[in-house]
Length: 185
Image (cartoon, rainbow, N blue to C red; front, side, top):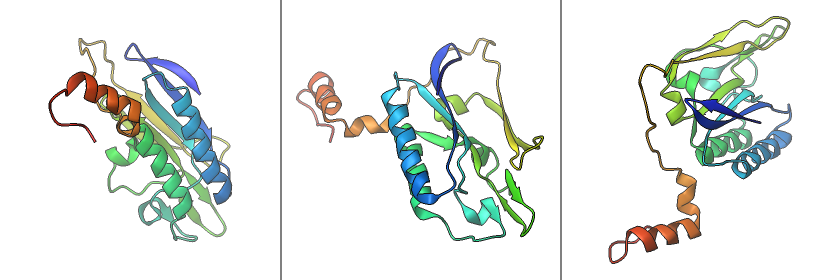
């Protein structure tokens, strides 16, 4: 986990390598979520690496068992939801079937590697691609960011949805902004 400067803003970059067993993966993603939330200093997050689970086996897997690994998928989706992240490769390639991992006998292809990034960061992604890697059974995901030094300034504000479950935050907003009006529930 690293703090990085992207667009002169602090962001958190998390590189992960998920375990191979589903029960360990669920616990692992819960730990990643807790660590990221604990170290979040009102920043955007980028989580990338080998998640060891195709999120949608229909489009992200060929061969082998195509049954979704629900408990792992739910854990990853919770991570995405809580941190407001999305799969940038899938967003840029909504119907393409490309894989980051392969097994030769029997032939199984899966997309197990992801760049999950915050919406405000994704606005600056100009290219994302799956490319071959050397001496590994995983391909790499290349991501290229736009040069934002061309006079583009500022950042779009986006509500961090998890704040709506923080009672202290909601009470403070109600007290400061909405006296005599409707209450945020």
